[in-house]
Amino acid sequence: AQKITQTQPGMFVQEKEAVTLDCTYDTSDPSYGLFWYKQPSSGEMIFLIYQGSYDQQNATEGRYSLNFQKARKSANLVISASQLGDSAMYFCAMRRGSNYQLIWGAGTKLIIKP
Amino acid sequence: EAGVAQSPRYKIIEKRQSVAFWCNPISGHATLYWYQQILGQGPKLLIQFQNNGVVDDSQLPKDRFSAERLKGVDSTLKIQPAKLEDSAVYLCASSSLTKKGGEREKLFFGSGTQLSVL
Image (cartoon, helix red, strand yellow):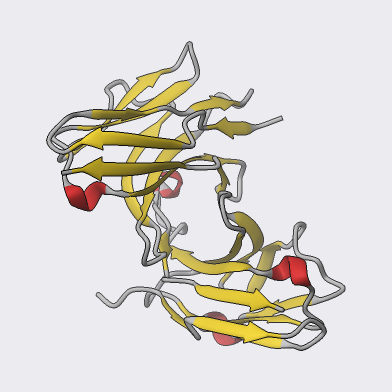
């Protein structure tokens, strides 16, 4: 069965440090996409970064990068130089199927300490 | 561009009452989703629309939940009668999946409606 696993329920990180949020996935489809979303306390899901299964390079978007290890089925999010505003829930999701639906992980709560 | 609009922001009802949520997607987005997010969990898809047609409603509890998207724009999600376990945040999202390379298209979310059933 297709599944997304985020093993870190919560993390505390010192401001300005880099942080890695783990995500592993399980699928037998050769074509899939992986997303990371941020959900602050306001509730809105905010898109951060996308990685396609056939992409040759790891995705980067500003301070966000995705450490994509296809053989290990992992897609970890790396946030460089963390800021207080990065405190939020972070969700990993996988797009699959012809309807492009998303399967979501349980999320990781990230708290940045000043 | 304007984002996905949802209302109300909060709703408190008693069990067995009915409730309705409204969503206005980003202009031009053909695909609209309703998700249920229970506290501490990731979102769960309830229903997906493509224009005004239903693509997938396999996880929608049809004995109590209903949704419509008239004219392929706004959408409403209704619960009748509500149960205690329906307490959750209901998120609406939209996407323009009809574009070429649509598998890379991200979903845009509204702020959600937080429902408390007492």
